[in-house]
Length: 138
Image (cartoon, rainbow, N blue to C red; front, side, top):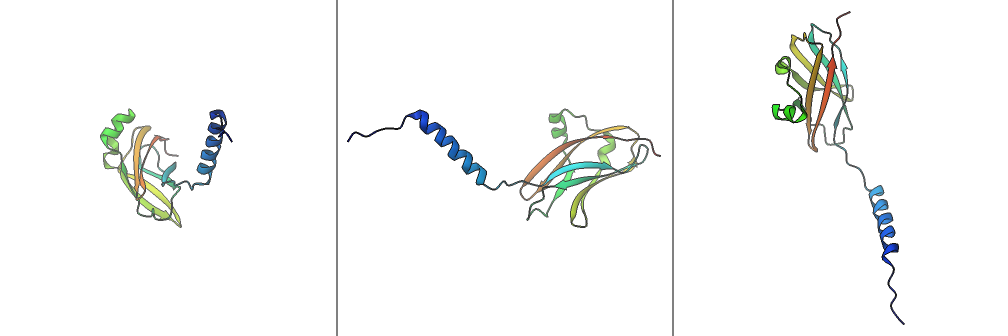
């Protein structure tokens, strides 16, 4: 009996379907990330803001955050603002929810700030850019 080969046109779609099914059942590993920024302070006051820490996975409790390096700012096309030189970033908990607190000791007198924050965990490093618009105090 002659050996029959399957045409390549049949094998390619079968391989694609198998690959899609394989990928669909794999667990997706996500590292902690930076979410929404909430501004608490106003123009002319020391900066006080909070950033949500999202997608925190078990084992990622050891988080650290910092203002990104001047090289990272340059790569992102952002001019570092001198007012951010005394920016303090601390990871805190509000109940069970981790947040990143951003504070300066000096008043911010510019209505527009751009920051680049780096969050590091045991599973990796994430960077996110934020634009802050400060309103006049009420």
